[in-house]
Length: 250
Image 1 (cartoon, rainbow, N blue to C red):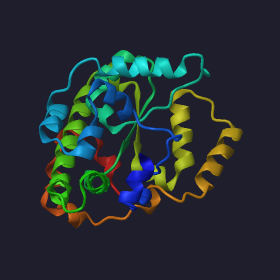
Image 2 (tube, rainbow, N blue to C red):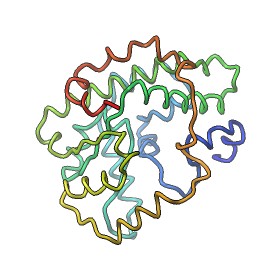
Image 3 (tube, one colour):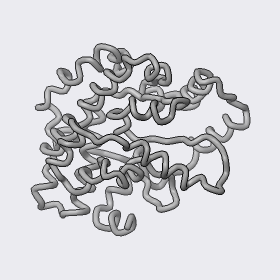
């Protein structure tokens, strides 16, 4: 499936690494609960994404937990490392399901991540429907991304008013993950009381230095293709900006 997608839209290989044996985001788990941004990203279902943004059923993380239990059954024991931006909609349920979770929230100026994600979704839609489809309209996708994730940022900020949620989270500026990745990981480990060994630091250095034929470092896009300058992004997610604005500065 991945090979066919990249064959249909070759630039997908520059946006994201594709391999059936690589780690995958939790969106694939939440597909099983029919609560996943993957459906919207690939297939353009406006009513569904409205429901996903403003509604959301209960029990998503109960399904998520059952999937993890299946994956680790008779398998190695250790600490799960999980990731999915839509978790921002469900921080309360995440912490209620996993009360000992150690959460890292990265912060990036919305104007930057809206354009980046819109470019990714644009490529996915072209893989599904072709470049000439109205479902592949760049400015429409830009508006959808801002609406969806602008609401996610606001919901997450509201959830973090609960001490039991906020106390589980460590905040990181996205820019620092690019300029000082090892330093960021060391701070995360120190914050959560995890051991950061010299051996692990060497592993990180090898990982950072490894050649990557595909992936986000090669992702190129023009924000104008997605109408970013017309979206009034600085006025969106006011509660989020009020609390985390300092982490968004370049």
